[in-house]
Length: 309
Image 1 (spheres, rainbow, N blue to C red):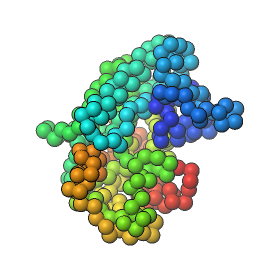
Image 2: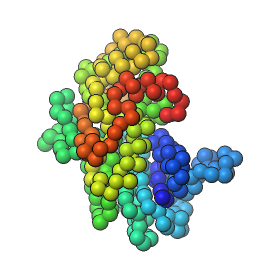
Image 3: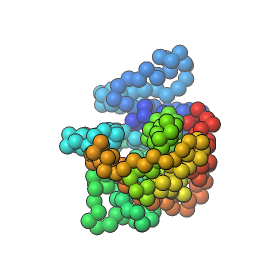
Image 4: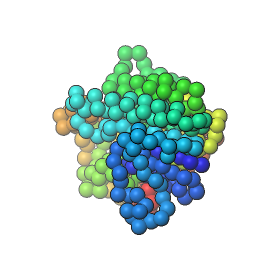
C-alpha cells in the first residue's frame, strides 16, 4: 500500500509513518520544508520519502499510484489566539485541505480513501452532554474551535466529494514525544499538580498507539466513512485525569490552577484547558475496533514504562 501523509512530520504523523513502514507499506511524507529526518540524512537506506508542498505543486508525479491520503496539516493551536493567530489557524487548515483535494484529482484513479484530521471541538463544550458522531453542538453554543472545525470538515467534504472520506475527530492524544501530554504531566512531576479551573470539564483522550491503530483500521475497512471520534470509550473529567496522573507517577495532586489566572495568562486559548466535551467513539465501537488502552490508568502506565510512544 502506498500512503501519503500530509503534515507528516508532526507528533501523530511521525508515529503513523513509523507504524506503516513496519507493516511494509510505502510512505511519502509531505511538509513545508525538507526534514533532516530523511533516511539519507540519518544514515539509513529505508524509510519514508519526503517532499515539500512546493515540490509537489511543480511535479505531482510522486503521488501516482497512492492508495491513501492522510491530511494532518494545519497550524498549531498552542499559541496565543490573537486575531492574526486565529486567521492562521483557520486559513492553514482550509488552504492545505483544498490543496490536498486538488492533488488527489491529478492522477487516475486517485486515492481510495482520504483520512482527514478533524477535532472533537466541533461539538462545542458541555459539562453534561454526551456526544457521538450523530450529535451536533447546541444552537447558540458556538466557539472559535467549533467554528474552525466545521469549516475544516466542510472544505474536506467539498474537496473530496465522490471519494471515501473519513473525518477523524481527535481528542487529546497521549504520548511521550509530543502533543499536550508532556506539558499536562509536567506540573505533577514537579510536585505542583492539581485540578485546572473547576476540574469538572471533560477530557476526551486517546493513547497515541490507539490513535495510529484507528487510522490504520479506518483505511483498511471500506465500510467506514464520515465522522469517526478518535477518543477512548472512557472519557474522564480534568479532576479525574489529574488524580490518575498522581497515582501512576506517585506524585501529589493538590495544587489547583484557578481559571481566572489561566485566562489572564493564556487569553482565549485557555478554553483548551478550562472547557471540554464528553465524547464517545460510537463509530469505532460499532465497526468492532478494539482499544489497546481503553482505560486512562493503563494508558498512563504504558506511557510511564515505555519510550516507544
